[in-house]
Image 1 (tube, rainbow, N blue to C red):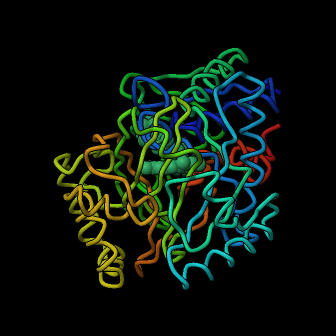
Image 2 (image 1 turned 45 degrees about the vertical axis):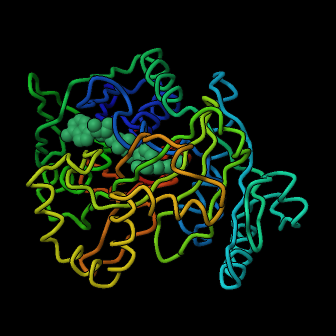
Length: 402
Ligand SMILES: Cc1cc2nc3c(=O)[nH]c(=O)nc-3n(C[C@H](O)[C@H](O)[C@H](O)COP(=O)(O)OP(=O)(O)OC[C@H]3O[C@@H](n4cnc5c(N)ncnc54)[C@H](O)[C@@H]3O)c2cc1C
């Protein structure tokens, strides 16, 4: 029997991890990956905080909880095996008042339920020793978390896919997909059409549009793009941050709040906020796409979200326009932080799925439609979990490819 042909659409971490895992498990498969940009990870996967999350926040039993725990172990092992810069530097989560103290203790229980090891409430002295500049009413140490070079991970994945006979096509946006009644899939790029037996779509910020366009069915959820902006510390202030320093998040939202991040390059960043982006791949406030903006602003789900979360949305938008407002969030954790210590940093846009009732969909979501598998929602910790998400797709949606 001829080897099966699989197309993977999207050269972010999840598409690359899926193509790699397919070739690892089924070396005879013909795997081709199509990415619209000139290289891997131009969007979410190359514009994130670089953190290895270990599963502290997520509802026990959820896909995020399972795949973050499995994912951080696998991603760390991958970095070790392939000599990719990473560091398990640990994280401290800081409470700023009595109510957050309780939430923090709840998070510690949740982390234990998710199988995290070494969680520890720090005494004032222990916290001062680790992070002399921070202030907190209580602090939780999460020792398993770390940082990595996700761009290095993606470059390695491309090399491994090609070594195993897979093809990676950059500058190849997939425009349309047709599936015959017999199940054969034809994908059309600008210059060519190719036939496949299966397709796995990992298109991040476009996942709802590609689902609708490729399957001809109504999308089960909609993506609303939320931009996150960062500020970078001038090098002389890098020693203000030793670990990853996070606030207690508002668990109503999937966004983890403005935090301090230590990067593998040695730099330190603070951010990100969470502002509606006026373009799916829009990295500044002046990056506007009328279609994308109208689509978000007229989506009943977004209007419902805004109605229910007006104060949150406005607070984040103001923090995008005003450095003082952004820094005020950071000062809750490190009061000595000043605007003069920071310069404008990078930005990323999160693909956040939202239901028509305005609910932010928290968990990862994957759907199969005929011979097409679509990753519909893979927000943070999708980078950490990418190798585990790929295994999950193989186990649950591609068992019939041998
Ligand atoms: C600001 C920010 C901070 C984050 N911080 C972290 C963190 O610290 N740790 C963590 O674990 N996670 C983090 N995340 C989440 C993480 O980055 C994502 O979960 C992960 O990168 C998703 O990977 P992906 O492959 O699904 O999407 P993407 O990386 O967005 O890749 C999708 C790819 O599909 C391509 N594409 C789209 N349509 C087509 C088409 N028609 N044809 C061809 N190609 C197409 C795009 O060009 C893109 O390259 C963060 C995200 C953001 C935005």
